[in-house]
Image 1: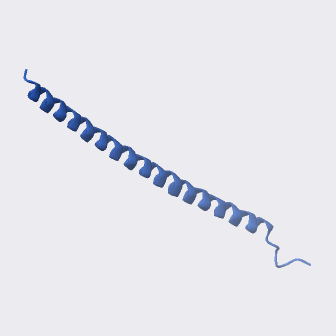
Image 2 (image 1 turned 180 degrees about the horizontal axis):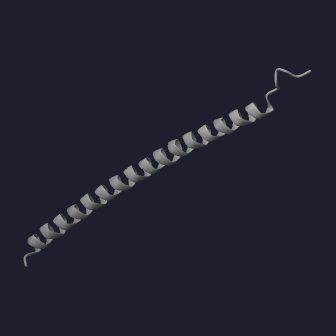
Image 3 (image 1 turned 90 degrees about the vertical axis):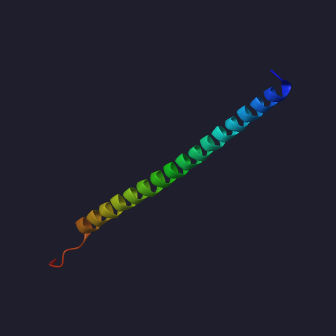
Length: 69
């Protein structure tokens, strides 16, 4: 083959590799963002709800009754 064709082939191959790498990086970034958002917001809202529920139960248990003598 002629050297010009080899250069063109190498250029096309490198271009395809760069496109694949860019797409892979975009996918990694999206997955990281989704993981961070779902893990933090879902987890924290669940924990906050459970804590509020537990505090409500404890307040109810230790609430003074009105008919004490």
